[in-house]
Image 1 (spheres, rainbow, N blue to C red):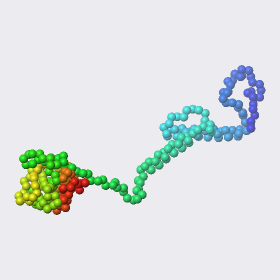
Image 2 (image 1 turned 30 degrees about the horizontal axis):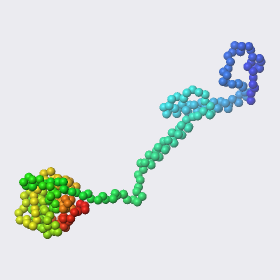
Image 3 (image 1 turned 90 degrees about the horizontal axis):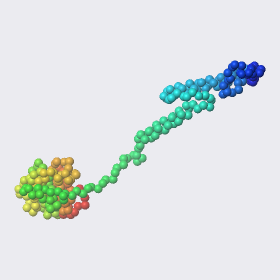
Image 4 (image 1 turned 120 degrees about the vertical axis):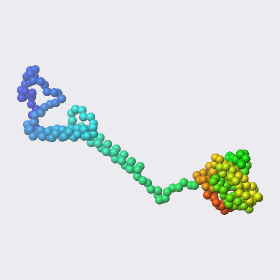
Length: 259
């Protein structure tokens, strides 16, 4: 391919280099080929290196990276292919995980899951007190068993009379009928004398507030109070004793839960 020539056309090297500077040692041995076409391979290799360097510079500018430091590039020099591959894999993995989290899932059975119903809470009125017409405070526990009629804003004469008669013929004739409003209401005349009927005031609405079923309602209501002061049943928007008279026999028995 080429002839290894001397430094002076094959002759002896002049003393002191002939006044010419020496070539850089990193250039190594210089071989001048006999056929200039032999330089094509090296020229192609150098052009490939230049193209790769230009591509790397463009990608660095697009990715806002620092300029590549000046160094000698070869065919074995690492490019941006590996970093770009790693970035692509990371982006794809992130997108797949996001889709997996956000994708709606279906219940295999096709029906929603329902929590088992919780048992009804036991409501006790033993800690409450009512006010009689003389202004005396009476604890509710001393009045049980009883049917409490909440009649704010209603005379409810038929409801009161019907409740008294229903208690009189029930299995708990000793139960009292307590007619309760914000202020002690006036009781109708001619009530059954076999049943004790009393009027009380509840200025704070403590009875209605203590029964969750009645708390949001302001309508006429009935609360059946067992002998132990616990609520047996509560009825809102009541107009007749027929709504609860079947439960009156339970007033003398300690209830297990609220209705």
